[in-house]
Image 1 (cartoon, rainbow, N blue to C red):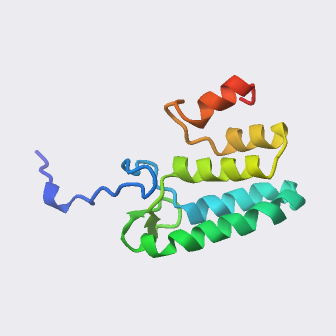
Image 2: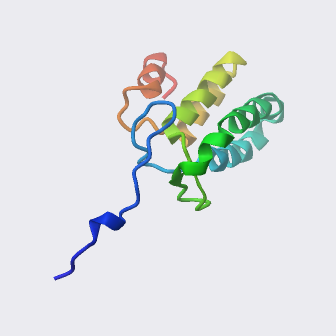
Amino acid sequence: MITKNYSDLEPQFLCDVCSIAVTNPICPSCLTQEIEAWLTLYPNLRNEIMPKLNKYLYKIEDKLADSTECIKCKNKRAAVCPYCFTDFVLMELKKIRANRIVLKEFLEFFNFDFDHDGYSKEAEKLGII
C-alpha cells in the first residue's frame, strides 16, 4: 500500500481577482503570449490591445512572487486565474469596439468559462458563440 505525506502537498493559491482557487494555472504572461500570437492576424487590433495587456501584467507583477506554478512556463506566477484574465481581455476588446467576428474567435480560442455562468452566458445571448 502506498501512503502519501499530505503535509508535503503544494499550497492552494487563490486568484487575486475573484478569490477562487486557481485550478487551471496558466499565468497571465503565458496567456498574453498566446493572445499576441493570435493577434498577428489583426495587426491594428494588436497594436491597440497589447499595450493594455502589458500595463495589466506590470500592475500585477508584484503579486506574482507567491503564486501557483504555471503549467506552461513552470514559474510561480499564476496569481490571476485564466477566467479573470480572459474576462479582462474580453472587456478591453469590447472597449475598443472589436467586431463580432473577433469577439467570437477570441471566445473560441480563449474561453475559460467552464461553468458557463460568466462571459459565455452573455456571448450565447448575443449569438457570438
